[in-house]
Image (tube, rainbow, N blue to C red; front, side, top):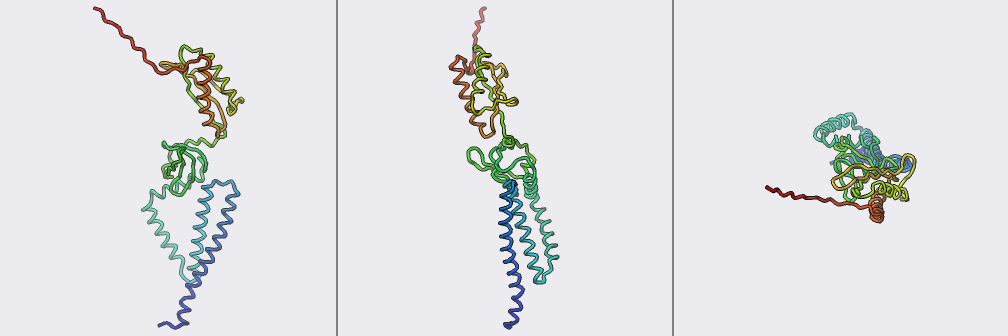
Amino acid sequence: MFTKEQLIEMLKPLVKMALILLIGHIAITYIMKLIRKAFQRSKLDKSLANYCAKAINVILHVFVILAAFDAVGVSTSGIVAASSAAVVAIGVALKDSLSNVAGGVWLLFSPRFSTGDYISTGGDEGIVISVELLHTTLQTPDSKQVSIPNGVLVNSHITNYSIENKRRVDILFPVSYEADVHKAKLLALDTLKKHPLILDGNDTEPFVRVRSYGDSAVNLTVRAWCQNENYWDVYYDIIEDLREVFESNGIMIPYNQLDVRIQENKE
């Protein structure tokens, strides 16, 4: 049996370690609040700020744990060596996951896209909600969430639709061969220039020209510039407005048709 004094001596290191861990955790919690506030005031990307905050939190807790062991006389060099060996073993076992982690770090520190940008990649597209250690999450236009492994994403072709303030609307609009194409072009240009959301400057002037001659229609290329956030409004407005203007001015919009000729073979 242990005496009261022996029990107190045995418990002293444990109490000392517990106090160090408790005080360290409280101090880290306060420090992390200050760091997160600093990140919020900065222009740092939201996902990058969250990633940095998590990394700092883990590092600080590791230091506190090592300090607690050192304070009670436990050699930290052995713990560090064992941890290093464990990290290597885990790295070999989880090499695919580590490639995703590396991809996440690359995406966070590269300027390919930011949280809130609208991107498309590998057949998926949507708004970037977050970039985590293992995957990037997109919210699709129909409110679905798509998680893409960072290791795949970092090696994929990415189209960022939000990086520029302006965006060009491209529409292929058909008119019949019997229509006055010159008149159609003038009507289309006039319609574009009257739209309040379409830009009309030196480098953003609306454009309408003949693109090609199809089987049953003359195809007009219609191009207009607008602010990025107005893209879809302008896109659908152009389609609706041009049809209304063309029909009211006798410019027919054709539909696919097939002419069949029967030739009699007279012998």
